[in-house]
Amino acid sequence: MNSTVPVEVNGLSNVIAIAANKSNSYALKNDGTVWSWGAMRTAPVQMKELSGVSALVAAGESAFALKSDGTVWSWGDNSKKQLGDGTTNSRTVAQPINGLNGITQIAVSKVHGMALKSDGTVWKWGEAGSLTPAIPVQNTKINNVRAIGAADNKSLAVKKDGTVWVWDYYYAPEYPGTSVRYTDTPISIGGLTGVEIIAASSAMQIAAKDGSIWDGA
Image (cartoon, rainbow, N blue to C red; front, side):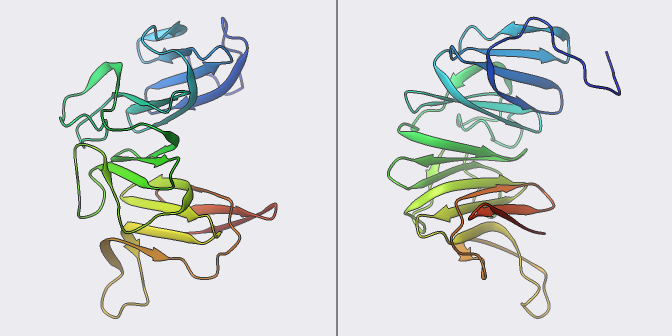
């Protein structure tokens, strides 16, 4: 049912987080269960294979859950290797991504995913930039990271020193004769220090520092 005004979703309570992609919506309850609706379902249905979930993210036609044990589970469209399972097979049932443990944050776009480990390392999979692994691969060129963000073909990270770094699809008009570069080497975004968190979309990135918000294309 379409509506131009907010409508309460019946059957949901004690919700602590939500996420949505192009076809489905997801709700995380305070008991760690995940409920989904949309596409062919108008009422929320529990995803029985998921429990102990602490965070949800979604993009494109895919979705991901971070469990309290530090594992990451994925489901949905996999045409761009974005589920991180070594295939391009899409599926509706959530399964764990092998090789990911000790994860504290996940970030995704419609074509790739990222995971931040508790040791400050960053792992990536999917078709973003020049490297397009079907399973999580560590970017060994960056460490000491405390937050991550993902956009279409772009990966971002905030280091523990508050600086912001970007790689994969990098818009750089200062390079004569070109406006776009692909690189797996993170590049520092000048003028941003003291950043705590970051978020990104296909058109812009925003960063929070000292209670203020900074944005840019």
